[in-house]
Image 1 (cartoon, one colour):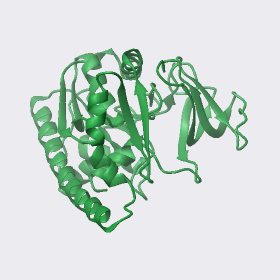
Image 2 (cartoon, one colour; image 1 turned 60 degrees about the horizontal axis):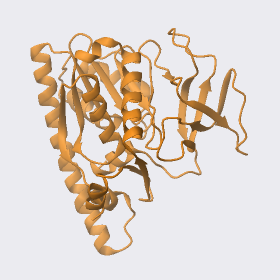
Image 3 (cartoon, helix red, strand yellow; image 1 turned 135 degrees about the horizontal axis):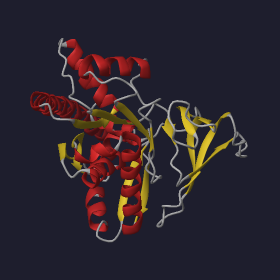
Length: 321
């Protein structure tokens, strides 16, 4: 099986992956040095954005414990690095299940298999929401400050369920909700609506206590939104570019919109120069709400001619969305 292949190979090199709407996987090989750079990069940027106090907080991750799917693997490693106090709510999602769910079925048997996995994914999502409720309820009762992490679709479903039931679990003190998946929300749901729901369900104001991360399997950097203005900051250890339709670099001043590309110096086991399928608006003048220097990402959307891709998209497919 694909999962056994990944497990066997992991003693030599770590293959993380993402996928798209065609079911074609993107595999990224990380040796030990690149893995260490990746984990440290994510962790240091998270602390720089949120504050040093997060090193003492309890992380609750609405993700599987064992997987090679990048959005699920990296948060656990980062949480362990930052505080070591980590609760993971799912056990395992195998690569074979991911492939069966994301690849468009070509035969009747593949359609049946995909449908069954979709039903099981719906059950898994229901159990995940219940576990989330239980862990958050315990934290609220103990007045424990937590960092709650999940993809935007999962957090949206959780908060929506609370509001529909007329419940509010107000997270204590400096608790933070961290989401991954960026702009990949349910159709017709804006980020403003998501933030409103987050406040109604968990008492989390945005951007002060909601941090959203934008990244990809190929990149060893995550672009976190700041708690002052909600803008996604570009760390100083990565070089980003915007390209026009002819793949020519756009000027690096003012506000520019183009195809995102980057040079990632942390990639030691694969070429770290990547042209993405994302159309991004960057303000090269920086964030007007905080003192951090460097450009910020203001808007992200998928280029229409490109395949829909991303770890959050994959996780949503598996959970029956």
